[in-house]
Image (cartoon, rainbow, N blue to C red; front, top):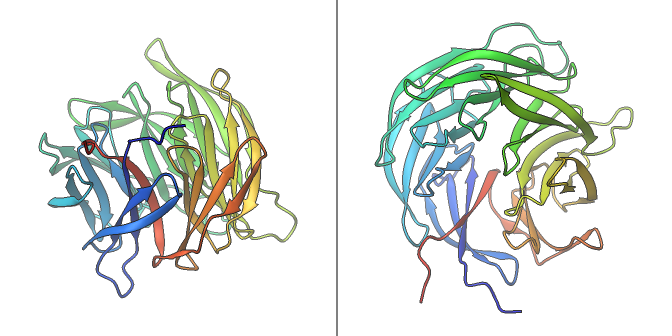
Length: 356
């Protein structure tokens, strides 16, 4: 089989504890399933990074705001600007499907911030901001609002905002002209479950929500019917077993590049769990759940060729790599860990310009 000519880089965001460079850039060896450090970007406490839907820009959380970068042909990041979010440091950032607005989720202050995006990728003024209010279940950290994720539905009509402190997902109607939101619905999760991250199927019909404290994924069917969002829960599936007294916590949630597999991870038992995705029904079937040879896999992802996997192990300051055999439902350690301090998230990016 001929080797793919597609070239990728990986962006890894980190906290900056003794290191000013919060984003590391790696060349991805698609044949060997390894990373080679390419460059690093000076930025403080990059909690999360996201690439615009047009593939031209990268946005990152930083202390007290967000920063934008132009992605150069070789994957290097060129700083554009910083914008304040008028609040505490965010934990998640994403853009709408027209790349005209940016959404920032605030874990610490329970605040959703919407900012204007310009055609050159720069971040403009705040167009809306909403503080979640209320009291949670009182379990663990679930006693006040903690927004952990904000993602648009693929039709660009509704913003799904996961509040793990309040154990629900707020569904906001999105005004794509003014950049404002209005509450349209609430998806209520099990008390004390802490909904953390949201992913959406390629066709936009299925919503996947991972719950941190009770280690399961809820699957919803979504459609916009007569101008209103309609969600139907079709499955709940665990990410790991929860024996009495366990301190497991689910973390990552990511699709493979072809959307045929969904990956999650678990702190406590320090594992990754991979699911086969039924493209027609949206239902998940566990392929495997295996250890990652590190502590607190805060994020994990599958290489774009589905042959390898990387885990970002937050507490052991390293990335571990594995070769996948999806037919045999297993993975094998692939080389030594790569040191990286307190990693948070990873994004694979396909280079837009290929070498001749």
